[in-house]
Amino acid sequence: MTQIRDDFRSDTVTRPSRGMREAMAKAEVGDDVFGDDPTVNRLEAVLAERLGKPAGVFMASGTQSNLAALLSHCGRGDEYIAGMDAHCYAHEQGGAAWLGSIQPQPLPHQPDGTLSLDAIAAAIKPDDMHYARTRLLALENTLGGRVIPLTYLNEATALAKSRGLATHLDGARVFNAVVASNTDVAEMARPFDTISVCLSKGLGAPVGTVLVGEKDLIAKARRHRKALGGAMRQVGILAAAGLYALEHNVERLREDHGNARRLADGFAKVPALRVTMPDTNIVWVKVAPEHSEAFSAFVAAEGFGITGGYGGESQRWVTHMDVDAAAVDRAIGAAERFFAKTRY
Ligand SMILES: Cc1ncc(COP(=O)(O)O)c(C=O)c1O
Image (cartoon, rainbow, N blue to C red):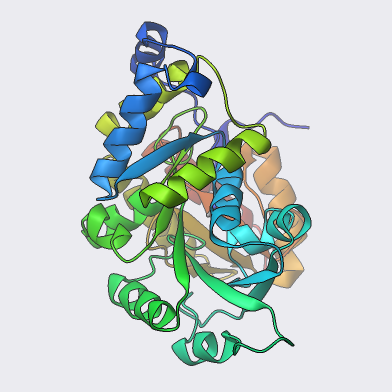
């Protein structure tokens, strides 16, 4: 197998920079299960404040954070509404169902990634012993790299609240969403009771997610985190990376978005490729079916890492701090070379 030189598989493949490693090495630490780690405490406070919420809790991963949030909002036999492509429903093993006895009510996405308000309203069950109790609306931003607009988030959460539901945002890439839409992150967080923010995606930290929200919910999530095996000890070493990421790597997400756009523009000129123009750092590319397998094999042999597409029609190319404009140009050049030799 050819080694990956330009790794477009995910924004999770980044390695901590020298500055980040120095911050980690210097971190003051303590036993976080006793609440003694000053760096973790600072990270939780900084993110909570930035998102305009009273409390935060450091989690090992986005999956753990979403699950702890769902467990905090819903009990056994309750139900949450989410999109069919939502990470917490589709890509986390259905953990809320098998670990929490929480039933998902998935809804199809509209072409822009939103869930129709009518569909949400219709999915909320009446207070009747035949039905699960619908407790929560869980949304995601960005969703597959698309920015879900603030106006929609406000409308959907207002509907949920008017029917007595709580609201959760999987904001694994919420900073991509706010940077791309020039929105204040606290504005985007405002209508949600809990928001999960990953530090180990575009922000470049090696580990970590922070769940922020109302005090009582975060206290519950902290309890659930313990049961989920996520209460860690001298974890300030990791929290220091998160603090560094928040200080240095938020505005630079614009570079990733620019590189994604450059990649999409270049691929769009190749007639066999159908490109979805990205809002942020994820480019979806449909390859003409007769070329998809050969093109995917070529891309891999040329040293590019991608996902979603080997042997398939649809490829996912993700930009991040460890792929630069030169890597993007190499990818465009490779596609041009491959298809120059191919008759359409
Ligand atoms: C939108 C979204 N939410 C949650 C997660 C889960 O994060 P983790 O891989 O840290 O568990 C991911 C992972 O890629 C994600 O893309």
